[in-house]
Length: 418
Image (cartoon, rainbow, N blue to C red; front, side, top):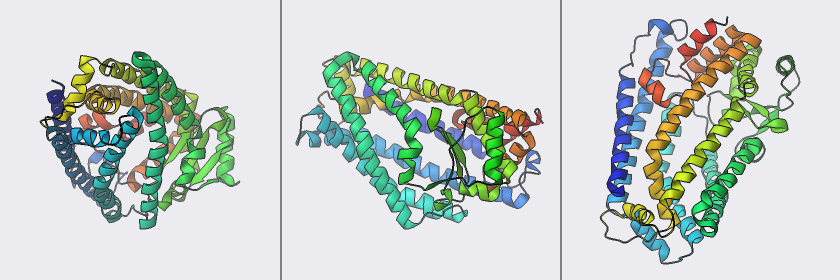
């Protein structure tokens, strides 16, 4: 039963993805829509549509090959073969899991490498965004692999140890451990992880820093850490983000953002980020992520209870037609559960996207009221045009995939504040 359910989930997920992509493509046009006049010019809009089409074709090839690979692994018993291979060397649950997921991750990374290279050095290069060198690309991959081994492997080992020690109630302790890790990373991400990939420099004293500090003081936001990150090392696309909690909170500006925007626009963008903090969106995001993790772990505990018939059936589901009898194990159980859990994860993702879009409106309104709605509107327009964003997506596509409202929706909302 689980085997066919997993196959159905994979096919339906792919079908929905393709349907939404098709609906989105029906909104493509080389003619500038009237509602976008004054934002895009005709030539720039045409180029944004070409970029969107190129990304969509790339996504179609990648998702199709991913589906075929997953179906092959399931039907032909690829996961069962991997489990048998691992058991030739160890029967201890922790090394088995590390070995199993290590092989899976390495093969997956190897197969995705040509697509990653194409995306960065062909697709992004074609539209003038790429600034990543071959050296940076290779180092990023190696550093990412090392982090996966250290952090991912360490966390997985700890969770398995908890599972083996506490049995059916492991999810409670695992939930606490993962929640602590999430909060720790949220606080120290910019201090520990970012420096491995980018340089961060404090924003120098000058008109921009003075304007930011003046606004922060006005709205009662204690801010000492304002940093510039060398985003131009990899891409021409611009961004800004807020990270950390308490004394560790930090605002980070991409150098590409500073190059393309006025001081007023930059303060407006940061006012939006500060709005998220003042409205407690950052804290709410952590709480919601923690609850989502707890729900997942609780349901997982019901499926992988030791020596239960349902746990054995779940593990056997990934053996396909290989005829191999997979023994119950944490690593195979969690793999199968991850595939079964995807519909619920998808629904929770829709809810989180809905909440996120509401938060974006609220942060925009905060920036508009407390600073300048026109400056924020100008910044959003410039960001969208410079990034060749699709400003005319299908509503269904927005509902399923967008964590932010569309540019036009945000502009209409800000016009009410102006």
